[in-house]
Amino acid sequence: DAAGWQRACELVAAARRITVLTGAGISTGSGIPDFRGPNGVWTRDPQAQRLSDIDSYRADPEVRRAAWRSRAQHPAWGAEPGPAHRAFIELADSGRLRALLTQNIDELHQRAGLDPELVLELHGSMFGTVCLDCGEGGTMRAALRRVAEGEPDPSCEGCGGILKSATVSFGQALDPEVVRSGQRAAMDCELFLSAGTSLTVHPAAGFAELAARAGADLIVCNAEPTPYDDRAAAVLRGNLDEVLPRLLAVPTVPNSRP
Ligand code: NAD
Ligand code: ZN
Image (tube, rainbow, N blue to C red; front, side, top):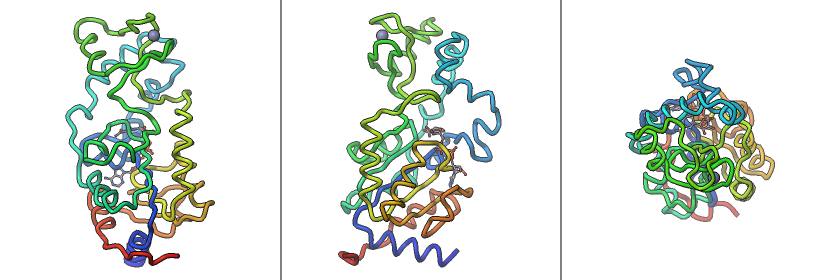
């Protein structure tokens, strides 16, 4: 509504340190479906969640083969950043983007031109691989070449261990250093902006909690309700490709807060 928009624009204009949290909803406009939205991958096929479970991935070669097939066909390979990704560039240029925490694994924030130093990939990146046994990293491109050349479940070339995308599956811990940086950014901002996430996956959603407790104002931009809407200073529904460019294009008021 109009009051929400006015409040949100005032908060953005006044804040000197803004920490952003993004989720799958920021990339649906680029053709990458989310998981839990009305058209989400898991909404349509609850079984698909099995491919994201670390125990079944370790235990079942058929799960791994299916995972490699779906990685090869992932819509992110052909996706381009859109207006929602680009909306953060100006904010970063103004020096007020403290950090952008993302649950996305598609690298579209960086490809939109955002300084990679400002991006914290909470759930990793689908363009890397990691060995579950020795930790050796590699590129997804190289692994998928091996799949295409007849290895449906390629193993680590160093130790023979199980290879996986460098993303965080259910049952896997987040990178503690990334989490700590995210916590610092959440506690060290005047405004916490959540965009395109259902705020249901922990610990990612916990950053909003942390920011609110540290005294930051909260803005939630999402098509559907989230558990944090009640605590938000403003809730903006609607398509992020329109909402974010409009919200973040507001001119700033220098030093309007002590
Ligand atoms: P989610 O699927 O739980 O929530 C996405 C939210 O975005 C939904 O509430 C939906 O209503 C909203 N949304 C979708 N399109 C929108 C639009 N155009 N405008 C406004 N709102 C829109 O996603 P999540 O909370 O990010 O968690 C999903 C998990 O799956 C994450 O952990 C992430 O790692 C992974 N994931 C990543 C990608 C990606 O990298 N693009 C895609 C799917 C899932
Ligand atoms: Zn290995």
